[in-house]
Image 1 (cartoon, one colour):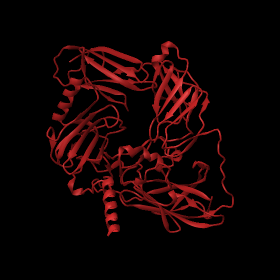
Image 2 (cartoon, one colour):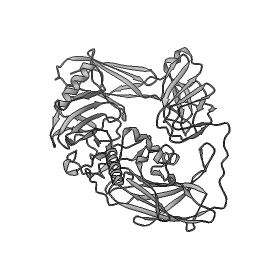
Image 3 (spheres, helix red, strand yellow):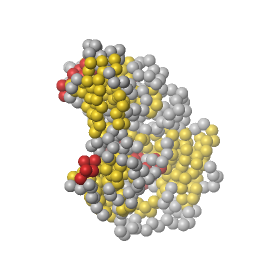
Image 4 (cartoon, rainbow, N blue to C red):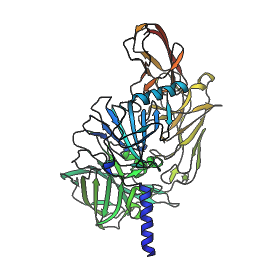
Length: 575
């Protein structure tokens, strides 16, 4: 009886962690007049995060009607130049929340409410929250129109379903709410083998991956491009590089499930059923990060990283480590399944090698563990790593190198410093400070930059105080101080004194050489007016909300970049 109660309790706890089971019959399709294809699916491994929803294609057009998928109320409205852009959140009566991102505009009454709040607060970006009685919605009611706002590279709808209580995200395809046309099994691209050795103190040392191309035998079945067994070491794990496609689109999609067997025994299974936003950066733990950032496919690490959460694995034996003795023959099988139930598999033999990988500890390195905070120094650089930032224990040996050559308008002011080993992913940001000599005129414009793999300077950010530039960052690339002295560039899309009485908006284009646009203010006749910004195209515009008066108006747009440089454009128009 006690055992039965224990099983029931564990089942209940697991169900609570995974959220309620959804009934597809409770939900309508969120957008009208589209063909139902998607450009991205739930849980795709992206740089630094899992994709939180599905991206529904709108045929390259904006203005498609978005409808409430179920009864509920508008609980949040968000307007931002980045992220989801214009977004609407519906708290539904069934215990879930629906999120619609990248809108062109809200429906008229909601749009008027947002415009009033923006003017009252004098802010272009807003987050508004509402109780259940302010904006109730009925299933099928139009709530807004699809667009391309925020961090969007083309018109589409980003759609999510969350558990309202926990904000855990659901895989809406696996739940049956979104049903794409998909009969194509995943493509297994490569298999990589990583041999490891455990050093004193629990540090895991790795050899460079050994990579093998997968060849399709027939639909859904793959083999390696060699007949003989793979030679493997005493301990190691596999990385499966896989991608997925769907009917009618050329986009690449993420996997729902990856399973691995050794000699017929399942030893690893990853499933993407859902996650919380606090777990989103764990994508860098479930993947093999150095391979993941170098490929367009998904590179699943078929082993559990030291600090990777258990919730993504439904099976795990010996943390996914494959062990052999010299001459031992073993059979490996890997199966990949997409969110529509299509499957592919690959099988191959491995044989234990005679030679043994023995790593040598770096006695000068500092050991940094996931559960502990650490401070690393090198020259005039200090890096503060919070507890919980790492996915696994690292041997860190900070180094100083020369700063790269920078473009005209930038001035490199310090050497470059690397705090962590190359290609180290972080779950939390570390704080990096560099002290250097900075001329007085450059101090307001001094920030941190990183040296990219191509040897170029890329903006990180931060601020300067008493000769020390400090920034929070996820990058493990070398960092250095740079002064950005070039202001943004503004171009109006109308002529001076143009007649805009037949136009519904006044627009500009603002670009920056390095640090990007950080803030912007638009004044018409000396009065603040709301301004939209589309960062992917550089567009800024104000939509007129009053009728033409056939009079002359003054306009002034001021833009500031991330390094404190400002630019202004002034002119007149008739309307």
